Each structure stands twice: as structure tokens, then as C-alpha cells.
Length: 226
Image (cartoon, rainbow, N blue to C red):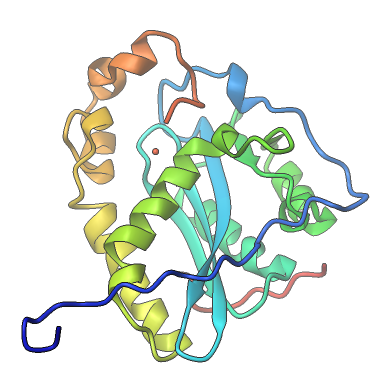
């Protein structure tokens, strides 16, 4: 295989990142009722794991459902609430938050934590969560994480957290957001899609009323209680 320049892709061990067995409040799936017509109407959030040489680390992301643009991300060593809080703070700092914005996630402990939901309420952001056992309720975020794994993570062997941060940040902000074309966006990148006013006129399944649930780093931690 070495002589023929072949790469062995190993089966990756599954790591659970969602703990929905908690006593914290959960919220109705508002996103399923929405037809998104512009940016900053629906944000979708999720967590995945990244394998390093000697450990697993975790990536929290927030996307704008209209353009599929990643607007917040954070890579950390634990699944504590600070992981999602840092991604949220990056999203809040990069976008103009107005009335009517909905934040959608799974029912995981990190998204149900009081510190996280209080921060959303401070900005008058409505909270939406997927139904138990229905991962496709969060299809946009799931689709992005699948793309990230297939096109970046599984092609690399990260030796350290810092190397993973650098490579993933490069992919997210300079490849995925700015260059990667989406058929659902009229074969434009998320950044190009946001810059052109025609927007969803080219998005057939959105015009048909399928709504928001039809299938898409910050480096400085912000402490937050669990």
C-alpha cells in the first residue's frame, strides 16, 4: 500500500456526545414549524467528537440555517457547558441578533444547562429542541458535521489539540464558508449566498414549504457553570 501511495482509512470508534438523561427543562421543536426566508431567523447547534493521537476532543458548532454558514465554533477537551457557551458567544459576536430568532439543538445537557438557556433569553432568542430519538430534526447541523468529518477530519491524523484547532478553523472559515458550493444554495458557498439578495428563490425545496428541517474557533475559553 505504501508503494502504491494508498491510504488506509480506519473504522472510527463511536463516541457519544449527547446526554439527554437529565432533569433540566426541554423545549418544543419550534424549528419544524418554520419556513426560513433570511439569515438570523434560525440557528442550529450540535456537538461532535474529534479523534487525536492520544485523546478525543469535542467540537461545538452553530450554523445559520438559511445559508448553512458556520457562525460559531469551539474545540475543547471536555463536554462541559463551556464548550457550547464559547460557540454561542462567537455566534452572538459575529451576527446581528433581532427579534424572532430561534436557536435549535438536540436535548443534550450542554444545551439545556441554565447558563446556556439564560444567555439565549438575554438576547430574546427562542429555544427549540429536537424530539427524543429524532436526529433528523437537526438535519442542517448533522449534515455539516458529516461534511466536516468526510472532507477534513478523516483525512488527517491530528497530533495535538492546537493542530486540530488550526486545521479545522482553516476548513470551516476558508473552505466550507467561503468556497464549498451547495446545490441547495444554487451552487454557491454560504458566504456568496448571504451576499446575493435572491437567496431562497433558487432553493426549490424551501419554496415548496418543506420548512427548516429538510436536509445541511474560538480559541479563548469563556468559563461557564455546568
